[in-house]
Image 1 (cartoon, rainbow, N blue to C red):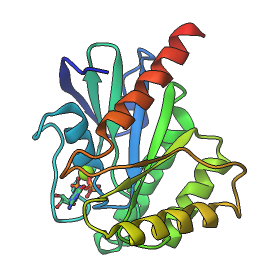
Image 2: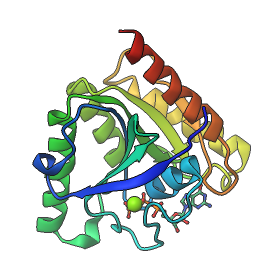
Image 3: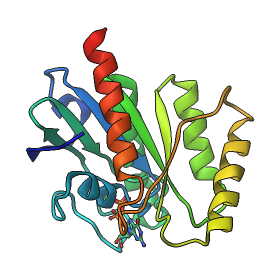
Image 4: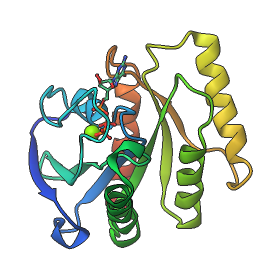
Length: 201
Ligand code: GTP
Ligand code: MG
């Protein structure tokens, strides 16, 4: 799939502030600093579309990117950033939860997991929450340019195995790197297949 025109359309402060036209959307969620904004930039080929930073907690609002006037990419704040302070963290987590519960034209959520580490409780808890709330999602491992192949495979397998405690079946898994572009075509192909399914419904 080719992306032709992308625009940063809106930074929403609440779910009530989000676009209401019902276009299909794909949301990127994961721990703070996992690489959500970088991956959206890589997918669209626009380096400065979303704000990327070494400092965790950079994305604070719900950012909507309109793609070819037809569908949207959504850059969400990260969860689990302890240093931001309890009140602020809870506010962001409420914003994230209400986004997933209230947006009813979400085609798929991409749950981003840092491929350099074994399963983390915060990520497993979030995956369990998505399952409990019937939010459709795929696992997207990030920073796959960093670990050695064997470690990468071990971390992916361990995460999928840990998910068996609360999920039935195997999730769709996509390995990515915003540095090398690994997984870009697969992710775009997956988005395209979701869009095609919705158009024929
Ligand atoms: P928040 O908005 O704070 O939640 O972070 P985020 O998940 O949007 O992460 P962001 O895209 O801002 O990236 C965080 C850091 O990870 C930046 O320093 C990026 O350059 C780096 N990074 C992101 N993706 C990759 C990747 O695929 N490989 C490598 N090596 N570094 C990456
Ligand atoms: Mg971000």
